[in-house]
Image (cartoon, rainbow, N blue to C red; front, side, top):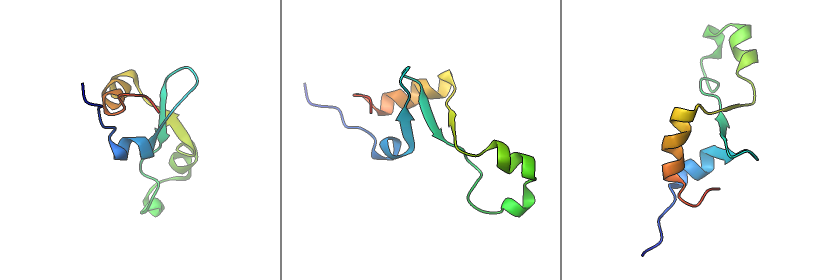
Length: 66
């Protein structure tokens, strides 16, 4: 069997936690932040753990893990 390719966009955007969950940066933090309130900006700092439904799809893009 040939080796499966990893989606290069996925390997740049996601990291695996020690328990096997996926974490990613939060969307909506690049530009036009003047229209967001301070609570939105504060709560979207750092990274978030992906939901199980999204993680299932993303793991198909990473056949050998990270």
